[in-house]
Image 1 (cartoon, rainbow, N blue to C red):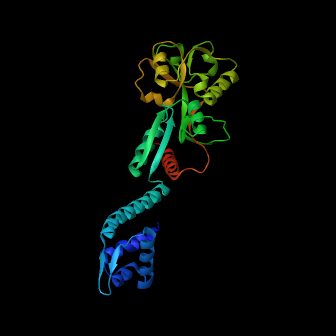
Image 2 (image 1 turned 120 degrees about the vertical axis):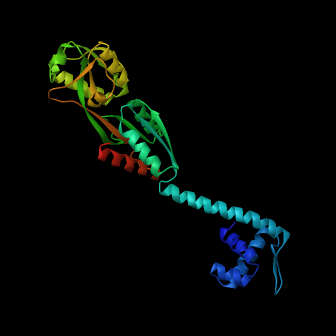
Image 3 (image 1 turned 90 degrees about the vertical axis):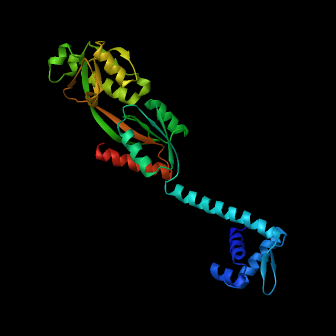
Length: 294
């Protein structure tokens, strides 16, 4: 059914005068009469009774008017929704992140404030799991440990922190202002499992090999806080991002490593195809936050 004919009928039903209705619609009277006649023919029922001086709704016309108004209202709402979605103001986004991603809280707060009608689903996930979910279409965007060697995905760095040598307070190296890589040889080392972030794991292992040895790994955990607490308990040493200095860290000393100095980077990853309007808005907000260093 032609929505234009519904609109013509509603205006005529409100005016009950072809001349006034035509003027309100911005058309001449003959096209209005033709459209109403076609509508009645399509429905197979008389909606209006007409005389040379009088126009009135029939009982079917009165009932049809109620439904026509609802239909036009729903159609207008559909147009409004489509336009808002096209501007990225409506929609749903699934966002994955590793727990150490400091950009996420600031970006989410700013995005929700600007686009409250976009629903965000936040999922803490290991980097490798995020990449798999993005490829499968189960995740719109992820924040993972760098580097990421996946040419099929769009990747950009959004956060970077220097890695520090973390050791118990009374460790023999805690008296030094900086730590040489070779001084970590043989030390019980607390790391993280390679499957959780293969690129970051390989980058760290490469630095150890360049120093001429492999780490003496005694424990691995995905949890940054768990690694911090294990160091504080005297289980071993670790490499942790510099911002853990802001965490409660009883019994832990952080020291910079002498060159080459390692970095921990977080990358924003998505499928690289044409992003939905809502995702494009979210990416723009993340870039704002990252450039501001929040």
